[in-house]
Image 1 (cartoon, rainbow, N blue to C red):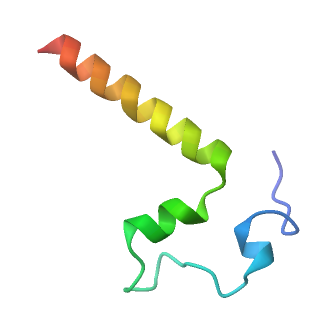
Image 2 (image 1 turned 135 degrees about the vertical axis):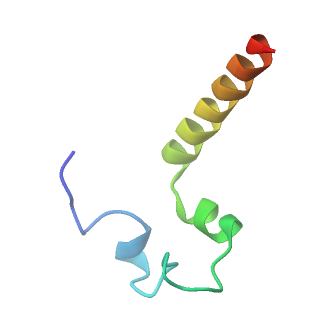
Image 3 (image 1 turned 60 degrees about the vertical axis):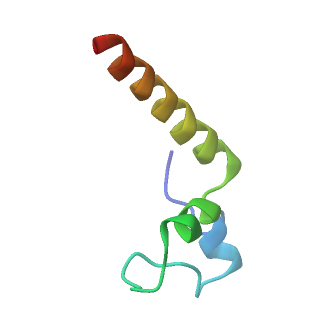
Length: 56
């Protein structure tokens, strides 16, 4: 998993969302992720909520 600058949202739009920009919302950051990363994050969040619910 090397860093390839020819792939990803930044390659299509070099002025894309940045973490330093104060106007960038969580929704903007979420939409900047590709579907694979979105699915991974969502799956991990569901597992975390499930584990917390079971611990209660």
